[in-house]
Length: 96
Picture 1 (tube, rainbow, N blue to C red):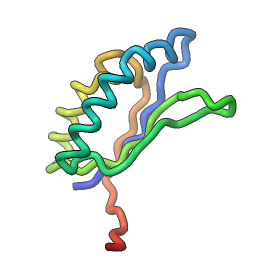
Picture 2 (cartoon, rainbow, N blue to C red):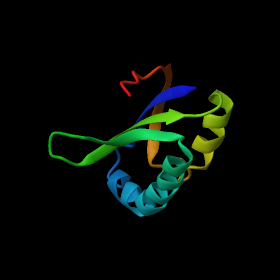
Picture 3 (cartoon, rainbow, N blue to C red):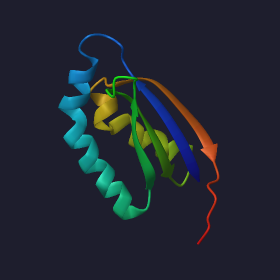
Picture 4 (cartoon, helix red, strand yellow):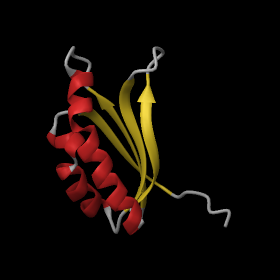
């Protein structure tokens, strides 16, 4: 099942540093998910100044429970980076 995740970082003065501290571990985990086919695409949401303030992810998990299990252990969750997370089931267009 495919999902869109839109996750916004905290807005406090330490928010960007928390993201930077967790970023390498988050990207390492995301690369593993890409290899398994669970990560489809994604990237950072930027503010007008070009600073990272959140994330968008297109994911493919067996069900919402499996997605939630992954999400609970992602470094951006455990590192208190993401503060507002919205999850929507989706169906991406396949032009292949």
